[in-house]
Length: 284
Image 1: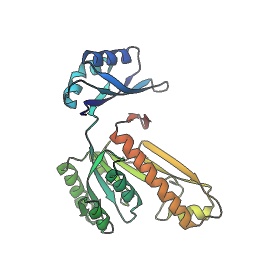
Image 2: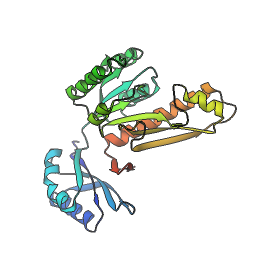
Image 3: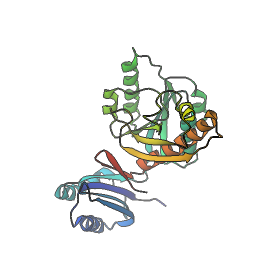
Image 4: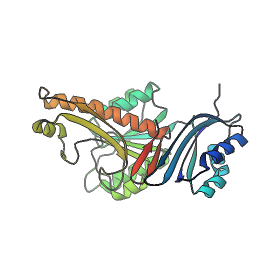
């Protein structure tokens, strides 16, 4: 059965009558609400709403969004309408560590993520075989300090050419330039171990082991020009103990990173994330 279902997301200054007006707008179009979640932030005085609804006939999401503009302007809303059946187009960036990449490719292949991975970009050739196994185009874009700008321009050209909706940094061990961060604002997600800033560097789990930590974790966030300080989307932790080696911690950490990143990607492509200043509202 063909579904004519859409997702409306909005944020605006909190006031009475918002839900009433949105419900009335849907009623005028014989819309049926499948799911609705809302949140009013008493600190910022902002209201957030996500409505999953269906219509008796198919319409373009852009047309519906335009039709909603009168209400959006009345309430000062930032509002978007999305086609719930449309698969988001992902470009994954990776380096030598492949656990997050492999997890995302498997979840996509098995239908757990409603996305199309249009390509894998890496500054190394390590995972060309993995991408080929999933029939995903692999792009080897090596980078040096001298060629960084050129390499980032190649990535952005691919983003535009493939009409990419979301860039996922799956343990991509390159710091993006300010220009690159701006170009991908709101559509790039990164994953890192939650030890930052205490355990920076190439071997955070070895540093954590040396310090005898009892909890390790991972954080997924939007990419901004402020390194590892973008709005947080998802986090998780796992308890560890003195019996575990640095290798054990690395394995546990890799599992958490993969899980947290996939959750963040799913929340983004299902339009469950709304920005609340430097924070996020994530509807589950």
